[in-house]
Image 1 (tube, rainbow, N blue to C red):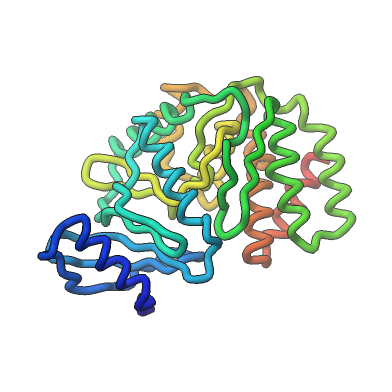
Image 2 (cartoon, rainbow, N blue to C red):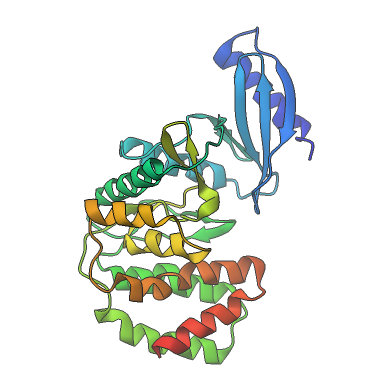
Length: 284
C-alpha cells in the first residue's frame, strides 16, 4: 500500500530536520504482519527506518504507543526500538532486522521480562488510557487487582460487544469466584499485548514493540504468551528461575486470557466467542 502523500512529506521534513539536507528516501517497501495498522520499510541513504501508519486511527493512538515504548525503555530491562518521531497518524522507529532464535536468547527473554515485571507502582493501572489493538484500553488506577481486572478489563469489553445475557450472567458468577484465586502480589509493569507478533530477536538481544502497557498482574503477560501456541519452554523456565510465579499460575492462565479473547471477539468475531464461553463454563 502506498503511503499517503501528506505522511510521506512529513517524514521527509522530519528526516531533513534530524539528519540534514543530504538525507534522501530511496525506497519505501510494505511490511507484513499488522492487523490494525499499515507498516512500511523506509530505506534512506542514511539508514533504514520502520514506519507504522493509519489515517483513520484515533488521534492519541500513536502518542500513547510512544509513551508505552518509553516506559519500557526507561525500565532498563528489555530493548525497544529507538523512537524517531510520531504524530496523530504515524509512528517511526529504527528498523529491526529479525534474527533467528537461540536457546540463549529465549533465556534472556524470560529473564528480561521477569525484570520488567519487577518494576512496580502503588496502584494497578496507569496514569493515562491507551489502546489494545484499535480498542480503547481503560487504565483507571485501583489498589486491588481483582477490582481492576473486572472494572477496567472485562466489563469495558463486555459493554462493547453484542454479548448474550447468558454470557453476561456467566461473567457475573465468575466475578464472585475469582476474588481468592489470584496471589497477593504488587503491580507489575506489563507489555500488555505479549504474543508472538510483538517481539523479535535482533542480533544478541530481544526486542519488544507494539505495547499496551499498564501496571497489572504479571500473570497477564505470561498468560497471553500462551494464547497462540506459547513461547519456547526455555523462556518460562528462565523467567521462573529469576522471578518465580506463584503457585497455581497455570490454572489462572485461562482467566487472564478472557481479556485478550474478549478483545479479539470485539475486533474479529469468529471462533473467539466460543473460546470465551468454554473458559467461563470451566469456572462457573
